[in-house]
Amino acid sequence: MSKTFADLGLPNELVSPLRKAGITEPFPIQAATIPDALAGRDVLGRAPTGSGKTLAFGLPLLATIKKSKPRRPRALILSPTRELAEQIRKELAPVAAGRGLRLLTVYGGVSYHPQRSKLKSGVDVLIACPGRLQDLIEQGDVSLEAAEYVVIDEADRMADMGFMPQVRKLLDMTSSQRQTVLFSATLDSDVAQLTRHYQNDPVRHETGGDSHDSGNARHHFWRVEHTNRLDLVADVAHAHESTLVFTRTRRGADRLARQLDKQGVKAEAIHGGRSQRQRDRALRQFKNGQAEALIATDVAARGIHVDGVECVIHFDPPEDHKAYLHRSGRTARAGAEGHVVSFIQHDQVKSNYRLQDSLGLSGAVGKPSIDALLDGGGEQLGKRSEGTENRNGSS
Image (cartoon, rainbow, N blue to C red; front, side, top):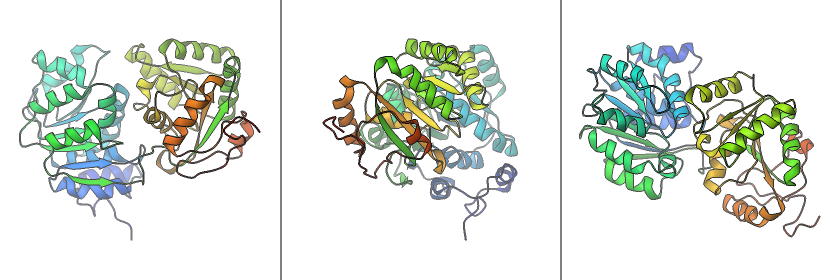
């Protein structure tokens, strides 16, 4: 008999709104971590994207914290990106309402005034990106002294983006009696140092097998000419209801979005150079189906959480295997199927094979095939297969 959220020890005022939303059976990471977090333990978690980790750390937080005084939140959730911060707030808000708890996201790119006003009125759970939070603290708008429940989400991405010094500084400002919950796709290097210094005998939970975000996705490596890439993106986008395309630069993302529009593919660009209003609009149009394709830079790879993305395209090659996984993890979420397509130009073949080796993917770089996408072809992570072309490039 499967467990319910009530079985995990959560109060009815949280279980009831979950039930109304059709959420009745915990995902594995939730079933594993919630009882320990409710018991007051520090938690160190690793789980694939789309596995339910927001509720895994959010539900115990909402169950245990008390109401806050003005400018002194009781709980802090640190997020590497604006989009992820908003996603966390939207997922937790209906449940928080059951206990009358107030949530606020703070991040750069938007006006300070609304954030300051809400902090002055009182916020129980503060979901923040490190840079803007640091600014608000320095200006006297908020104090972390009362923060007794702290979550660091996607800690590895924090490290990748250079936020670790700020994260450590912020943690030093929180209550010395805090409970600290940390989630990350990898638990080594800077993340390991963070848990050693800021967690107290954490219980460790890992679910979903290895650390690959896109375990159910089918991976395709296509040898393409530079001049053919636009037509191929358009063909893939026409074959799917939602396609997420990653480019190396902001300018490249904007240019590709414009070119796709001319090809009859409604596309929006999202990157760090756009205003928050523009980013929100692009993501909203992609989520509701008004845009068939979303063109993004790596800054958005971990912040985009959209259910039902059918295909991810690496228009430009990722920086390394971690970036590949972060990008690819936007599809095949929570057990769904999806496809990941890499465009490989002639001078990128060798470096791509090195990337494949680090990922455990042996399929060869072959000719583009929309039919292979539609027929469910391709290779899955951790499941070796033979490609259509051997590695010296011959058929």
